[in-house]
Structures are given as C-alpha cells and as structure tokens.
Amino acid sequence: MEQGQLQIMRSYLDNVQMTLDTVHYTKVGTNWRYRFENPEENRFYFIREGSGWIRLRGRLHHPKPGELLLLPAGAKLELGLCGEEERFGKYWCHFGAKVGDVHLFQMLDLPFSIRVGDEDWLERQFRALEALYRSPSLTAPLRIKSVLLELVSYYMEEALRQQDSQGIALAPSAAEGKITAVLHYIDTHLSEGITVEELARQMHFHPNYFMPYFKTMMGLSPIAYITRKRMDKAKELLRDTEVPVTEVAEAVGLELAYFSRLFKKQTALSPTQYRRNARGPRPEASSVSVPD
Image (cartoon, rainbow, N blue to C red; front, side, top):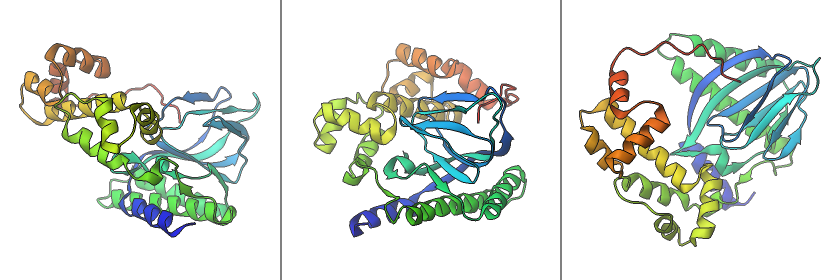
C-alpha cells in the first residue's frame, strides 16, 4: 500500500463517526428475500447456520457459516435463500459509519466477506452489542461505539491479512479528495439556486463527468443529494425554531408552493403538520416489520 493512500485512509478513520441502528440474532423465514436499491445503512452479517446468496454491486456470493459480511450503505443489494428448506441463522446489525456526510465504505474499497478465525470471540462481540443496544445505562452509547469500532477494525485487519495486504484500497473517486469542497459548497448555498454546472466548476470537472463521479461517491445524484439536504434543513428549522414556513422555504432556496409540495411528497406531511407533530407526543413505533 502506498504511503500516500495509507495517510488518506488513516485520516478517514480518524474522523469516522459510528452509530448503531439495530442489532439482533435472527433465523430468517423461508420466504426471506429482499432488494435494496440504495440502502441508507451498513450491514454486518455474521453467518452461523444455513446457506443463501447475496448479490452486491452485481457480484454474486454464497456465504457460509463462519463468514462475516460487510454490506455497505449506498450499494445496490439483493439477498435470498438457496432453497425452500434453507434458513439463514445470523447475527446482524445495521450501523452508520460516516466521515462528515460521506459514508466511510464509499470511500474505501473492501471485500464484502471475510473468514472468521475466532468465531466464539465474534459471537461475544455481537451479544455484547445487543445487550448494550437494550441497556438504559448512561455509558451504553459510548460502549456501543467502542464495540462497533472493534468490529470494523477486526474486519479491516482480517481483510488485509487474508488478501496479502491488498484487501483495502481507496475507492477510485475518493483518491482525488475533492468531494469535500463540493459538499461544503452545497451546505453553505442551500438558500440559493445550485446548479450541477456550478458544482462541477468547484472541482474543475466537466458536468458530464462530475455527475457520475458524485453519484459514485454519495450514492445519490447531485440533485437528489441537494434535495435531501434541503429537506433536512427544513425539518430542523420547523422542529427547532419559530421561523415561519415562508422563511423556511426561502432558507432552502425554494418557492413556497413548490417547497410545500416537495416537503409533503418527502414526508407525507405538510410543513405545518410536521412542525405540529414534531412538537407533540411522539407516535408509537409502527408495527410494520423492517427487513433485516
């Protein structure tokens, strides 16, 4: 590994923020099959029994017991069982790993499966993570981060060891290190009309090259990413301030009528309804099951 690439990757790891969404042990049903076009979270799957298949970025893999899989956010994913009699038994967790607004595993190129040497140790890590996830302890959030960092570190170290130091590399588009300037520009110009051409100029790219570059890095087109950031800022203003809806629309660079339509399309609520709900009692969690 080149020293320059090593320093860039160390910088990413130094700034990564880890969050846990959920963790469980599950023995899936015979109809277990899912497809995710652009998953928002990373997944660890530690296979304990059964067999199935996973297609990630167009590559097909048949994981076996004793494998640990890392399925990154933003990567098209399909998964299912090999037959009606097969049932996957697995520890799994959904987690976030970001450097700023960028998913860590969109900047690093890793294998999506490793062989686990000490399965008992890894099982203890997942059990500890699940116990902490349910714990009301003050320090549980810190300990959760510690276990997640341990799991990611273990995965990366094993990827390097098992693939003769070739198991980790900078993702091709991350090597140029230019995306941060674009993200900062978007964050500081949400109240203005932002064009793809202007974003491309920030990187000295032609727009036709910039658009696929950006989507490779972020998992979204520039317009979709800008829309998401505008909606995030609008939600924050509606939730945490008394700013009138008209000024919220101005703050995110949209005409009021279009802002209201777009906001309702994204959230199923009008801006006024969202503000009212955000400040009232939180609704009970939906009973609809979420695929793991």
